[in-house]
Image (cartoon, rainbow, N blue to C red; front, side, top):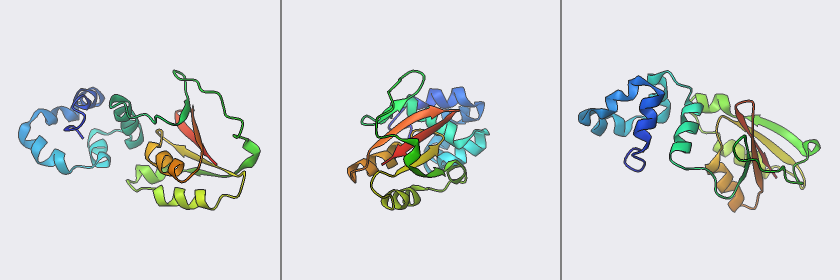
Length: 155
């Protein structure tokens, strides 16, 4: 990650003093190359979702083709987002905190939607990879920040 986004080193150092070890070239070439984001968040005592969200912002990895309504980037709710059409709310925060990927479950739930139905996805960060996958499959998505969580509506 740091090879591709060297600016994230400073962000990691701001998040936790535990990341000061990244300055050690030997540790950086060995342990840092195989450690997962979940593992390093545990080492630093950070919430994995919040850490990933912070790193994504630092790397400018915000979804380019998704509307996101949050305090610094208001986007009006699209007409197709109708709370009465939500057939399921799927909160994946605990799955992500366990270090597992909910991607297959999300795709399966989206594929089971009938015309006009909406799946609401709750995540600790904007789920850009799944949004991109769903959009290539013809789904529309809109996200907003609500109570320190991201609510993404999929139709």
